[in-house]
Length: 141
Image (tube, rainbow, N blue to C red; front, side, top):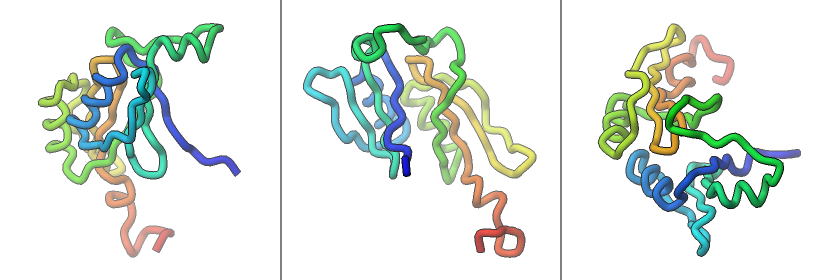
């Protein structure tokens, strides 16, 4: 059976991107390879990786679509936070661009959006299970 191992985004500068995610979200660096073209962050059972545009060109010679800061991409990284407002403020102070302020969704989850200097869209959200699951109404208890 397959399992999700790593999510990889192609970026202009791997080191700068890793540093941003360390500072903005408190993630721990696993490594950056000696060439600086690939690095990973510890995020739990699935690693978050960043690869250089040069490596993308080597791996995907038929071409690929670069993420740019000019438009929002069709995918996102989603982080669960105990305090969405605090996490959002920390990310913005670290250099993230505010895209959408925290909003409570109809299902009870609070969600906000930022993006990094590469244009990667990042959701900061409260725990979905904490807002939708109670001992009386959830099938997981």
